[in-house]
Image 1 (tube, rainbow, N blue to C red):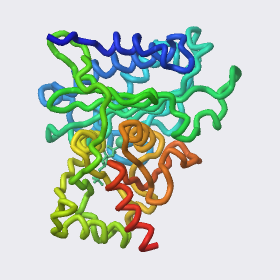
Image 2 (image 1 turned 45 degrees about the horizontal axis):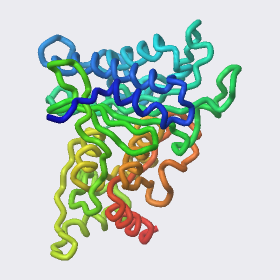
Image 3 (image 1 turned 60 degrees about the vertical axis):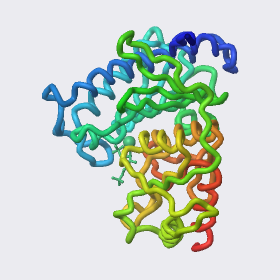
Length: 334
Ligand code: AHM
Ligand code: MG
């Protein structure tokens, strides 16, 4: 029988890998893991209690918020607040950053960007949703946190991860030294290492895109979709189309099976739909760390300088070969 390694044990074992091995980042990751378990409990019983449906408020992008979005947001912020290692939280659900000014967080060095419950429109139909998080270290030693410390490029992330609340619940994270996945064992209430050193397959045959928007896509993306559908044994085409509409679930599947996820600009979302700081950067770091690639068609996602917290970007993310093929089509049609 193989030994069970819990997330907590794993984080402590790997602490020495961190550039600043004082245990602060370990504690921060542990706090996120605990909040994830609490959110998981609520997501799991979403169909049972009167927690479904609109909360009556809208988030900063003007989209309807579900009650569970609010719940997840509160849980993660409260875990980060009481943990003492985080000085600023930027959440997709809040217009502005939340500065944590408590006694215990006086010397906190970490900034967390979080999408507490991504794909929440899927909850009503019992489809997987996720939490996505990104951790940066302050660039100044002390004093009030400056905007430039929050708007760091994705390359500066010290850790990133996601939780997928699916047929089983998993937490996948990286601290820049590979990617490891943990599955929640409900019988002991612990995330246990189930997917060590995750690597995206070199060859993929899945493309994931909301094809209903076809008419609104740039020509290069339209051409790529047609390319995916052409029969060609040598390149294993036609490819399989899979789209859940929950970015975490789509990217997670492609990470395991090999594939590309596309959310391009559209005529109605001229900057793309997905957010650089909350969705694209963390998933880009994970996919790169697993041997894949993430670009906006021209630039590496991780090298985009954020100008705004809620900035959006087009994204093509998956195994290198497939992402480079998309880039080829996108750049050709420019
Ligand atoms: P959300 O943050 O409002 O939940 O939106 C993000 C979600 C992603 O999870 C998913 O990939 C995308 O929106 C789906 O968008 P669309 O319905 O346009 O295909
Ligand atoms: Mg989201």
